[in-house]
Length: 66
Image 1 (spheres, rainbow, N blue to C red):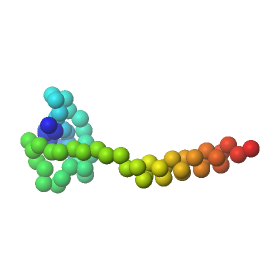
Image 2 (tube, rainbow, N blue to C red):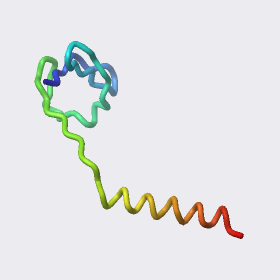
Image 3 (tube, helix red, strand yellow):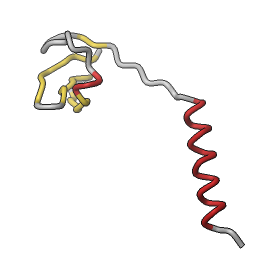
């Protein structure tokens, strides 16, 4: 369970399993308040990852031309 502990400037302090971590406030729903339970989901963007790999490969190819 992820609980909004408090807000500090541009950060939301989130408590999880007795520990806290900071999350950019823009990633927290605007209606969230201290004490609210929030759902946090992380997914891999396969399309963006593939695009980034192509970009890095192209830069490396350009850098290490014979």
